[in-house]
Amino acid sequence: MIISVAAQKGGVGKTSLTLHLSGAFAENSKKVLLCDVDPQHSLSNTFVQDVYSLEKTLKELLTDPDVQASQVLCRTKFENIDIIPSNLGLGLIEYELLSEPDSQYLLADKLDEVRKDYGLILIDCPPSLGIFTRLALTASDSVLIPLECSSYAVKSTGFLLELIQKIKKRANPELRLSGFVINKLDTRRRVEQDFRDMIRQNFGDKVFKTELKDSAKYAEAVTLKIPISFYQPKSEQAEACRELLKEILNAQA
Image (cartoon, rainbow, N blue to C red):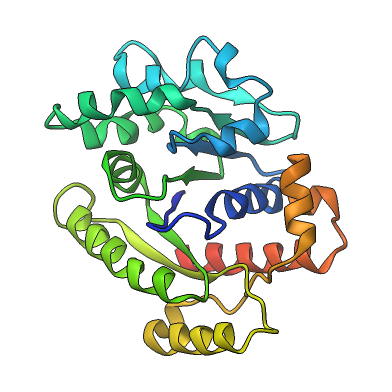
């Protein structure tokens, strides 16, 4: 199963959500592969000590037909979590990919080699709707969309949903919307409560029941580069990620 974590707006917690979900999956002795298609490479920095010391990254995987995914993926210090990393060099090939008619299929073709080795592959997308997000959506079975309870986050989602429909028409007819995750919620603020109600009203059962609250514990785990379920396994925050993962996996069934 391949799931893209995508959002047009930056700062919605897309990368941290990917980090914490990977931990929730891996703690059950199940193998998860992360794929960082964001040139900002925040996810790669979390799991790889020096992404610039690597001989091969996602850039080489996408541009060299002889490079296979198994040659690029890195083992992390966490058992059952591997990653296909990137760095700023990924941004240098954007125009090269745009000039190739079938470039949006490149990632899907490369991931086919290792797909059978993992119970879950999570793709962390950039906060844009450009070529790298298109590659990710074409390679994925479904899309997970984190949402902040704010005006811009809600409005920008419409453009992402339009892109998903375009990808479904030609490049990946099997692509599905996994659902929306209300993320970084501060229930003390009335305006966020109002936007939460609006999100649930507009998107109905496509919004997961589990909400991830704005918590310093999530931020601490990200700073320490540890999934929350490994950092504080008995915490409310870790349990919320486990419950969310259950909902996501059930939605794929």
